[in-house]
Amino acid sequence: MLPAIRRRQKIINGVLIILVLSLTMSWSSSNPERIEFIEDLFAQALHPLQVGVNAVADFFVSSHGFMVDVRNVFIENRELKEQLSQYAGIEYELLEVRHANRRLRELLDFAEDAPFETTPAQVIGRNPSTWFSTVTIDKGSNDGIELDMPVVTHRGLVGKVISVSPTFSKVQLIISPDSGISAIVQRTRDNGVLLGLTSPAGYTQLTRLPADSNISEGDVIISSPLTGIYPKGLVIGRVVEVYDDLVTLERSALIRPEVDFERLEEVLIIVNYD
View 1 (tube, one colour):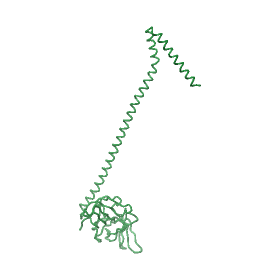
View 2: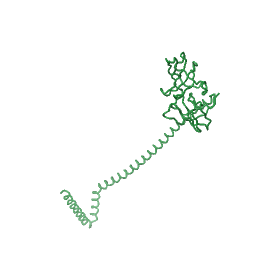
View 3: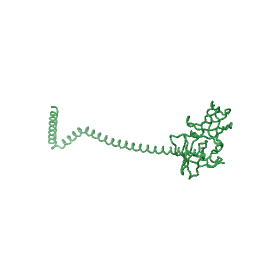
View 4: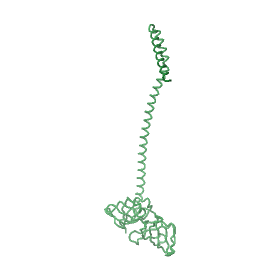
């Protein structure tokens, strides 16, 4: 019902507009002043509409410019983020290089002052199941590496070479449960046997000490030449606990190694010593 009424209303309005325009044209055609009057009348009537149209046009033009600016800002922001990411990556690489240079400088200083000949090597592999037992290094028989050669860092004794290939070797760590070496309490000169432990991991145990040994917490443990593998005097670690074996009547000590085996990256292989 309502749509039909609205259609009839639109038709009537259209007819009225045509009649008004026809009368206006006939009334004004014979008089130029009337034409100007009609033009002014229409101009005044259409002015608000023209202003509205211009405002809408300006809005769309300015909106388009705004969208272009937003898009440019987005692109610039993305490019800046990419540049910052690249700079951050470079910064991390430089930091890693500085750390590596510091470690290598410490090794070099140690090697220059050491009374034995060494070859530097990089740790290139660790087996998760034997994390505290062995490491793989990037030097082998092609580099003059042989079985039982001692391995050290500037901090102390690491272990010995237990297998050799042309381009890499495997090193048994002193903290390995399979390791056993002669050691000396630096202060008291007591001799003992240093064994790797399964618990606590990363520590060693100095056994076979005399029952009356004066060993105490904080004492430094060094390597002994009795086994014929290690040169005398290499730092092994420090005593953190002393206890007595009631069965064997021997004194033992828990030793914390000086070498940080969790962060072992570069080592020196002792290829010759007197």
